[in-house]
Amino acid sequence: MVYQNNLTYAQQQDEHDELKLFRNEFLIPRHNGHDAVYLCGNSLGLQPRAAKQYLQEQLNAWEDHAVEGWFTGNQPWLSYHEGLLPSLAELLGAQPAEITIMNSLTVNLHLMMVSFYKPNSKRYKILMEAGAFPSDQYAVESQLRFHGFDPQTAVIEIAPRDRELTLRTEDIIQEIEDNADELALILFSGINYYTGQLFDMEAIAKAGHRAGAMVGFDLAHAAGNVPVKLHDWDADFACWCSYKYMNSGPGGISGAFVHQKHFSNNTLNRFAGWWGYRREKQFLMQPGFEAERGAQGWNVSTSPILLMAVHKASLDIFEKAGGIIPLRTKADRLTAYLEFLINDINTQVGEEVYRIITPQDIKQRGSQLSVICKRNAKDIFNYLSDNGIIGDWREPDVIRLSPVPLYNTFTDVFKAGEALFKAIRAINL
Ligand SMILES: *Cc1c(COP(=O)(O)O)cnc(C)c1O
Image 1 (cartoon, rainbow, N blue to C red):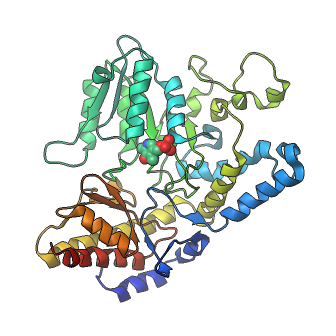
Image 2 (cartoon, rainbow, N blue to C red):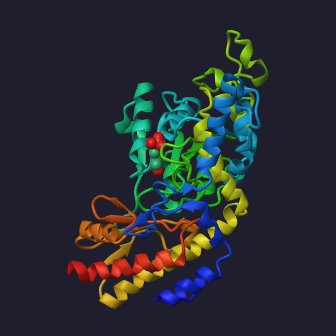
Image 3 (cartoon, rainbow, N blue to C red):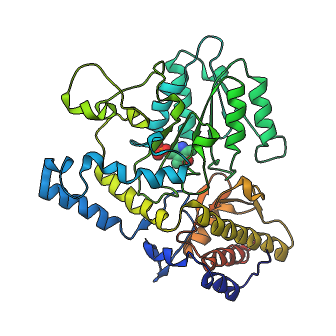
């Protein structure tokens, strides 16, 4: 692909973009009277225009039916989640029965570890990538302590090689094999939040199972961003949040995947609640927990319908767009264009002022590029913000920029590149 560093070229790409109308489905934040260049969908996806309506419908149902809303109206709340499962299952490569929509991400990580981290005195270690998202680290540490293990010795963190910034699949596999006798669980992110590296989840799951461990994935940065095939890859469990690439609102509802092969496994612990009870008997209010078949059996509490309504507004857009494959095709081009523009700045300046740490290989990344600013990083980030380019900042010197195919344009990406270039001059590096 030959890219060009000029506005006309970017505008032409937008004209030919078959997904361009989907931008109208979102509310784009404004900056000084213009649309901002929002490249922060990795942190908080934009609001679907229809979210208000979906929410209003459920507020109306509450107004009209009050408690009867659970059973009556156009979309009785008791089965409201069923309308979300097919599109969500499609995005995650799961069967609808393998998915449940509940809680928030870290809570679900804990619930899944209650079931799938089953240590004994020989096999108790948890392997994860070094530099995993802090909440995942805290969840793992506290689970270990809960079982009486010391995180210092029970967590195996795999780090990049010397002078490398991302992990090699072969090193991950090797680490799994080297620890095969002691591994109880492998918990990896699908995409590392800091580097933007997309891991080979299938290979990790295979190696993990060969080693006799359970394998779970945190898909916070992968869900709605890259194609995922949880069922075929044979993941034991997975969790995600919906507020990043799935555009379902701040603190939006999360979800969890449990592989079908575990549906009849009665040896798994679980922290149960009445919303995971067998559906046909849930309201008999009998003592003694009986789990609903499938991932639904991991539910704990009453469905938060208002959060689900916003989630549905977003999932319906994914469905209209034809799912993740066409979105990924556009996203690969948007991200490659951003990469081209950043490299072009280095060429023009005559030195590497920006270093992209996200892998060049498109099979190892999603939409996000993580960019190290060699000097005056925070000033550059502030310059971008002052000029309506919204990315996000990670200490000590990284800016993350994520063009999202549903609402970002080639022109957005061009403007971001232009601002990164002008920042160098403005800050007088
Ligand atoms: C965003 C993110 C979280 C956030 O978890 P919450 O429980 O939703 O606050 C956790 N883990 C990863 C990997 C993330 O990217």
